[in-house]
Length: 323
Image 1 (spheres, helix red, strand yellow):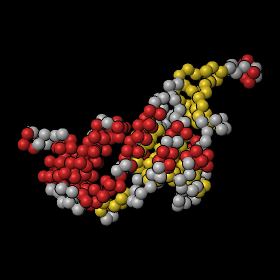
Image 2 (cartoon, helix red, strand yellow; image 1 turned 180 degrees about the horizontal axis):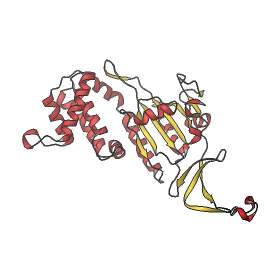
Image 3 (tube, helix red, strand yellow; image 1 turned 90 degrees about the horizontal axis):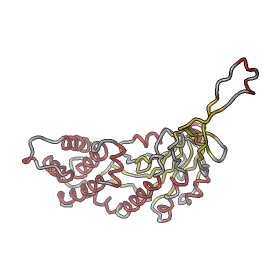
Image 4 (spheres, helix red, strand yellow; image 1 turned 60 degrees about the vertical axis):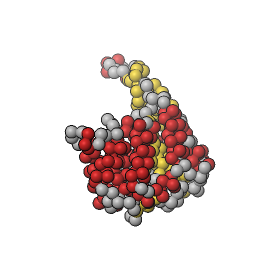
């Protein structure tokens, strides 16, 4: 099949490539997994190397020997014994059901439904995409936000699992790549080290907590977009959120203030000079500039100090703007 799709299902609008089978929204995840053809598990089997044969020994096929290669194993699809990849011995598979079944919590609460799910590149990559059950948020005209929840995983050792929010509707390899690389996504890496279930549980709790105030925050966002802001207020806001000393108590301008200001200027061009732009600038800084690495940054945004700063960013913006 084209677009690197092996099997897939979709709800709603037919994908541009016309592939896959259509399913009804709100289908239980177990049914979606079966319909998408990803109701298989990944097994780990030894890897063997073929020893060289002396041509003078006669028929080579009668003298071939194999030795197990230490430190490596192969991932094999249970449904057809298809080898997916060669991985190191410490690799622990993240099974498809393990990655996708937590969506049922959202489906049962009518918070999101499976919009697409499937297998790419011969089973080496799988994904599940849930559409958030809410109208698109438009804090300001032309600035429409419609989040999806994405889980993707590789079974060949080439990529970590990913989970988080994205604004890209994943329906093929190209759109999955776009979702992974999008500046607007907050995808967290989940390593194949046997601790995936712990991180997925933390993520589920974070997502369910997020939904509780999602629509209320949309109203607040719209109000912030009506409140003007100055560059002076922006700097005081940045200092308050990031715990930076005020201007009259420091010798030079910290890099963080410069980066937030750059993000703000970009946002002003898009949505105007208001507190919605200021909040977006702080969010952009926390998402793309703070911390030592992107993976650690996103984990912090969901589960650590970054999450507290993101919450503070909205609370302080509301207080300073007078919303």
